[in-house]
Amino acid sequence: MTETLLDLEKLAAAPRVREPFAWVVVPGFVRAAHLEAVLAAFPPIRGPGSFPAEKAGGPAFRALVAAMTAPATAAALGAALGIDLARAPTLVTVRGRCRAEDGRIHTDSGAKLVSALLYLNPGWRAAGGRLRLLRGAHDLEDMLVEVPPEAGTLVAFRRSAVSFHGHHPFVGERRSLQVNWMGSGLAASRERLRHRLSARVKRLAGAA
Image (cartoon, rainbow, N blue to C red; front, side, top):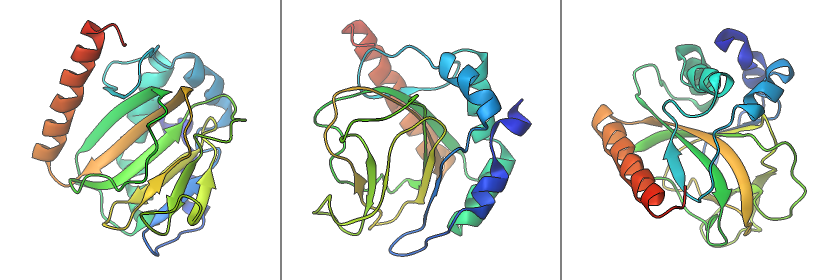
């Protein structure tokens, strides 16, 4: 299943943008034949924030995680973004809820080489919650592209000092799988531990 779940050919054919930072958007990255099963297997998440994706969800969701972290996917993303990811360790997290304060303009941590967001919402009508890749740090309207977080859509970008992104506020269910290719195994382990500790605190507080 992992070999056919993702449409790597569609990724290879997608327009490649390298300025002001490298990014690619691929609607329908999860093949239609598998999408319903993946959505049904998404792990139940009641609270906001990111949670470790290891062993989360049902078999179809775990197959998705395996496909997203496979060498073939890293090679295809690396080709699209102009970076070799063959030896880069991965950090995989999942989100299910969005708060009003989420989506503020930011760049990702310098420990990350590439961030890939795979959206898993059956549809999206809200004006908020649509990811925008931006030209600068101060204006959500000064965008390169806006991406509705609809099921099967991939957004991936190469992290840099100018890889600004964000979205207008949204409160409610907003499901995504995030894979980060990291600059070192130490950075990946440190971030993985941080997310595990955060998830435990949220469970103790009844948030997840």
